[in-house]
Amino acid sequence: MLATKFPSLLLILLQLSLLRYRHSLTSASAGFNQDYPLFDPRNSTSYRKLPHNHPSARFFRHFGNGDFLFYLLYGSGESASGIVSIETFSFPSHGKAYERIEGVVVFGCANNQVGQFRRSVTGIMGMNRSPLSLIGQMGSKSAQRFSYCLPPVDSRINTTILRFGNDVKSSRALRETSFLKYNDYNYRVDLLDISVGGRRLNLPNGTFPSGCMLDMGCSGSYLETHAYNEVVRVLMQHFSRFNLSRIAGGSSSQGQLCYWLRRGFSSFPNMTFHFKGANFEIGPKSLFQVRSDRFCVTMFGKDNMTILGAFQQQNVRFVYDIGNQKVLFGKEDCSRDTA
Image 1 (cartoon, helix red, strand yellow):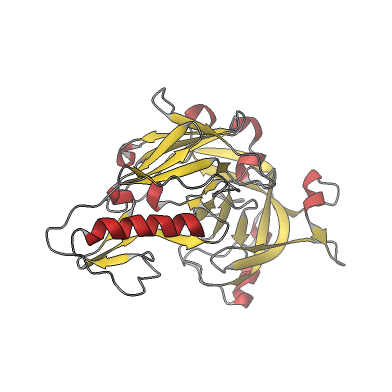
Image 2: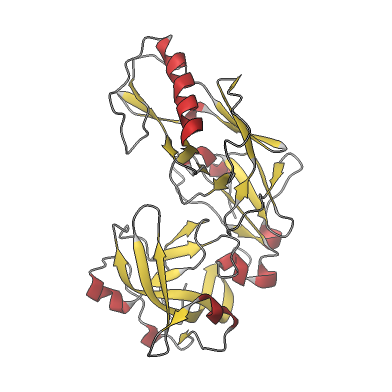
């Protein structure tokens, strides 16, 4: 729940995003359509624009009328802009009806959006290491820890629980790797090498100079171009042994490497990301998107960027321990993650 006497909302969680924003009533003038009612600040007794003496004011520019403005551009091309504001945020909690963060949460009240946003989505919830993200503003309520576990895409369970602080499930069986020190707020870890089907690629040192970003807001994964080309080469060698026919040009919506699926074929290889201090194993169901007549690798090549996306994170418990600068992960049946 957001603001005073306002209905439930659906926000997209982005770990590469820092500011939350919410579509406001004035968005209607920008042609934005959504299933939920647009946020009307006039109906909230706790809403106010960001004051000039607020500690977060230093992150924004203000214009002649005194308002602080924000502008966010996402990698998929969508953008949002509007007025930086303060509001009370409330979230459903299994311990009590709602957990409230009273009147101190800085967020963007968007009045202009460009791009194709889902109608069911009312805004973005940023969760990176910035002081402006939700986790950065929660203070002692979060203990600087959050966790999630994404159920498989073919599961009847299509929701997951975002846990904070003492509610975070942890286990000694979880593997861990430290966050990479870098000049941004994203969750980056040190990626040393990749294996495909148990075959180590032995990529040169420095292949991933900016590490590997972790982002459940990205549907598939991206690999630095040289690494991606090596992965494709090894995969093509693997599938050539079964005389499978590659689909020319691939499919940009499913992955750039696609093959026609032959009846009864099931020899899909796995993949391993060799992080510093821990291996992240990607099984075939989290590597290939299989249709009735074809299958595609859910990874893309991209210059100077590597991202571990949501498809590869299925059935894995992630614990982000920001206070200790590390992430923990391990296999789990995420469809059984309940309150």
